Length: 534
Image 1 (cartoon, rainbow, N blue to C red):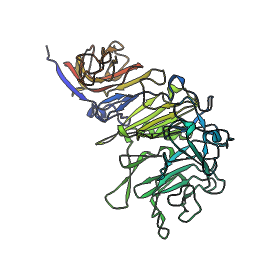
Image 2: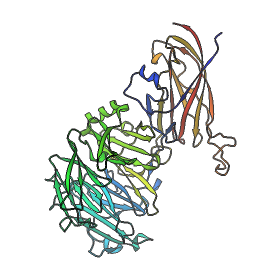
Image 3: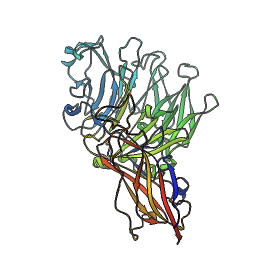
């Protein structure tokens, strides 16, 4: 009788969609499917966190009804959200203060401010936010662009109860009555672009005065392409257009300010995809997700494509780009870029997103399913802690990347390995057992499915699912919690699973659909018995 042989796989490489099954034999640690998992910065594949309503079970909709959330960001000790024709602020997600009301020049106290009539943000669309940090401001000045109206400025001063604070609001005129779509802060200036009737012009405010676009030091520069987004990058402002990318330099030198082209052959599909991560800018181009990176030459930049591994997903996205609401965010603590593309005509379970984790060898990718995001944003609260929020078509604001379920719905997570031939595609192998290296953040019970011969339905296959059993959270001295952690629980246990079936090749799919804690699959060890060639 033949002796059993070992095969070891370390989970690394992320989702690969642009390679065939034979090519993937060379990369056993990657994934053919990685749904609602994320590539961990420590290695392995981790089931993602969920999301929960801002305000918990007592949460309310800012408008009081089902209305798309158009924008959301952290500000001061709460959240600013836009929906319908209004703008709101809340500290707790339960009580919302409408803030699209014009204050007096010196600000209004709470009673005066709440008693004023609203200034409707007619036609308000997907919003962008920036916070201008003034030297004497408690929380900074949050500025909002909605694509249809003048910029809106909101500033709040004071601490303690909301009714003891002072509120400052105003409309910022960039170019007459024209609305503004894109904004950024760059080198002490507020930058505005996507201005109605002037879609190829970049406007910049007076130095250290974001409310003034007409004084000394303010101005504008026009390019020959329609602008799709703007973002500060080191000493330059990168201007993303439909078919080209440019950089605005020397913004504080009126004699030498100019726009230089970076490329005339690559454009940006959505300004809402632009983020900074790892010292580079990432954005959605027609051929995939690209980065704007600094080179060794001072003042020079280079472009690179970083999403070739998931090109089929990107192609499906870009071919139907006008059907989606695009939103994106960076989770800095995870070195992670998340892009969501929401089709509001579909159910929540059909909504999709892409997660890219920046590892030492570049981005590694995975997918999300079931997160509907009409807008997502982040910011630092008054304690300097970064918080993440998103909104949906139900009109609620959610704490993003939090909890163990999707606002009460189970999270369906799937990680499918490539097919393994164990070094010889012509030899029959009988699977004996496998050991799975996994770490859990709570008591979890995932399953594993085995399929032979590339899932050939003409061959008998093993039982639908093998139970991995219960994975307990580790018990670490000084950190373990009574009633939560299990005494003797290992940090990275090796879980033995008895297997059945034989074939020349097989793959494994790890599956969970529950509201339990996240867990990480680090790798696996397979014990198999080879037999005759066939």
